[in-house]
Amino acid sequence: MNYDVTIHEELTTAELADLLESSADFLHYIGHADEEGFRCVDGHLDADSLESVGVEAFLLNACRSYEQGAKLVEKGSTGGVVTLAEVVNSAATKVGRALARLLNSGFSLRSALSIAVKEVLVSIEYVTIGDGGLSLCEGDSGGLVKFDIKRVGSEYLISHYSYPSSSYRLGTLAKFMDEETTRHLASGLLDTFRVSEKELNSILDVQFAPVEVDNKLYWSNEISLSDL
Image (cartoon, rainbow, N blue to C red; front, top):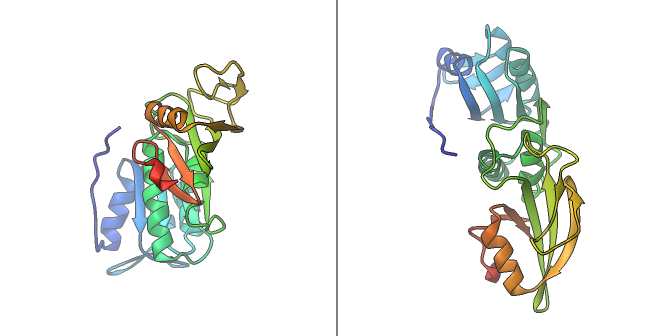
């Protein structure tokens, strides 16, 4: 799915208010927030002052943004991701990029966040608010999966995780490879499998999915076995 992306910088309180009240699927806010609200070039905007919010989902990538996020949900947003503490710029950037791509691949807010924060090990700072099960689009490859891969000699251990979506809910049956006869309930860790290099290449070629290696997040169409 392709997004129409617009970037806004150095907003005034009036401009940010207009942006939050306008219709949009997703807003990624990068800036500062405190007890007075969102910091703008001419002061602070408190989300409580908005008549309504048209943004369906959001990521407030600012320190201690929980309070403003809660007000956005009260004013009309379906759900979002907020912070509970100070966040480091480098970690915030990684989480923001990963979260956007995961949402674009069909993951819900909650599932996307659980994957995105593992790379930077900052899960305690980020939480979902509102409807964490919200998905902004459907994935292209059916069920949503993630692979954790570890090299063991000439073979590979691959842990297969499945995540619910609007089309593949809890209770869906899944299998790891076409030739496998075992069916698994599709939620959480299905199992860990030992595969050859040829089998791993085949899996990564067929399934577009996030791949975790040594706490680093890759995508199956980008990763090389030399990364393992």
